[in-house]
Picture 1: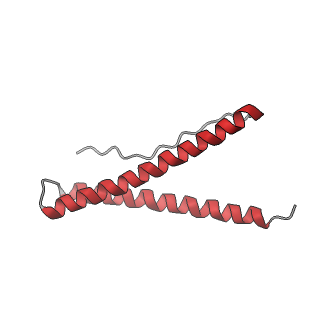
Picture 2 (picture 1 turned 30 degrees about the vertical axis):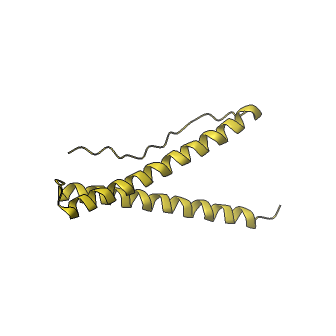
Length: 98
């Protein structure tokens, strides 16, 4: 049994940004965020498929169902916590007086 549902987030160390590449970095960040959310959603869908297949009686091991469900749950919880931190940061920035 091999499971490869890992959420990978590339890290760039480019500290110099010119005006032409700022838009490109925004686009890359947006694409990276979309990809990560699709991976989390795919994990949730896959765990639901495995659970329903196990319930129906197909040839699916219980350990595989539990592992997929836990991985999907952890990925979702991580995504939710990241969203909470981003919203908290945004609200703090909006409270700042300029």
